[in-house]
Image (cartoon, rainbow over all chains, first blue to last red):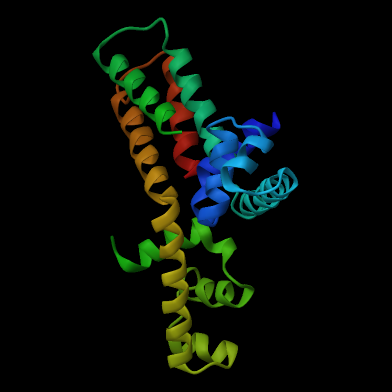
Length: 110
Length: 110
């Protein structure tokens, strides 16, 4: 998995367990797509300081996933919901439409 | 939700974040269904000590759910997978059977 995608996923799941400061910095990096230097300027931290904070936060988030495996579980469910949607693509009927709607709801929750 | 059911769910999701000791005691309580006195004897702790440990572990686990809301999310998906299964109950066909199989797989993962 691409590193930034992995970090985004981990942050989605476990971000609330980080400190307020770690969250600010990671959000600037992942969501606002700022560079390390830009983040450093924003929070008056050196570029190297920002780099270290992101590295440490990543280690923390990976530690949670290693123990809980909830991202892995969710990804597997997401794949299954996509399969359901795909299997019913060419089918019609009131029930089937309802099933498609539900499988899309599952996809949106993940 | 019944308290023991809630505790079991929270333990399923976040149990790995507890200490080894907390895990032992909670498993004796939730999975082995031992009484506080029985657990106390097993680990040479007073009945009150066991009670306190379970209470504190419960507070810790609830704290994780308050922040992460992953049990809530999973329960919502579980309900949706059950709806899919139910909607297709009286339908047949190769694709439909596959969809039913997948929705049951989702249910088993949760």
